[in-house]
Length: 397
Ligand code: GLY
Image (tube, rainbow, N blue to C red; front, side):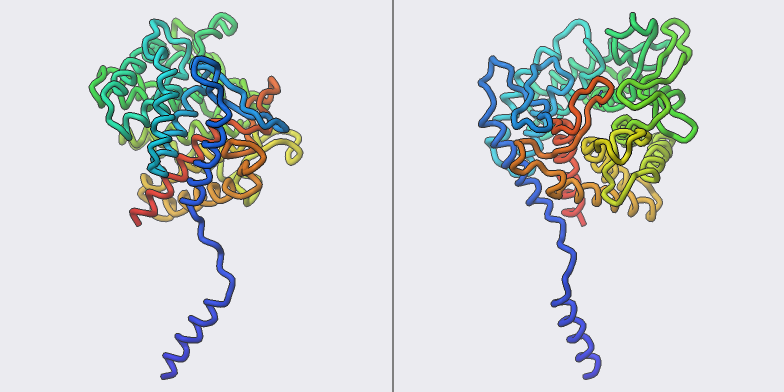
């Protein structure tokens, strides 16, 4: 009897105490669908510039780009994710509509730069994953071959920016390039040239060796001697200085090495993904887990945050938490990813009625003053990817 009274009392007390609201993932996916609908209603018709890239602070309108822009695939990628999260065919039709515009990227004889993975794997890659449309597969395989033309076997990496070779007098590779390896791994396993796997794995191993300081923070750019393949130096392009931790650069490293372990099962990538993650987590400025744009920017805290880096890392850490064997570490990565997603889903970071993007407060390129404290399409893309990863993991549980 006593025991029953005790249990009833506990139940009663816990029912009146305030509880922390559960994170409602579907509500946030539905929010993304609302924002996408608003954007679609404002876009010019096809045939005109109409791929959304960013909305500057104090503006309400999207800066629009064409298929050649490095961000061109994130919009249809976001549409595919909204379709996946809502099952509404309207979003599938819109994703197909915008994918069509990217087709010329797959038939180029010469690659403009390494961004083909961002452009085609976020768009057609998700499209193929969700529809198995064979024409999508062809586009992905062709694009992987175009990207591979930038590989320099002497260096062991892809040339990220052919346009900068003359200026630097050197082969250059940027940390962002890690993300584009996924296109090569996928192609090698889905009917494409098997050599693409070796190219991707070698690029990742060379990057692991040359692109990081002793504390596992990443350079943005590494220059290599084109003929001997020797490293010349590490430097920045979008960070504060050559030796600082540019937040988004580190996010590409965390996401990229996590993906490389998934694709290769080579344990060195799993170990490295944790090292580049741990230095990032250790240096985050506060409980929001949203970084300033560069961890060593001298004007912190009076400088801008980068929601895009947080979105990329939230998505990566959900995956990393499923790959690490150590249960404590797995739980830590999962908890951090969830906290990042929760922070991004507050009114501090969601655009709501401010503009039609999903998120505010990303920082694109401080050194040239571009997209500072803005809404940027890649933040939206990785945010909804993280929401979907969270949703799937919780459905499994
Ligand atoms: N260069 C790609 C980026 O801004 O992350």
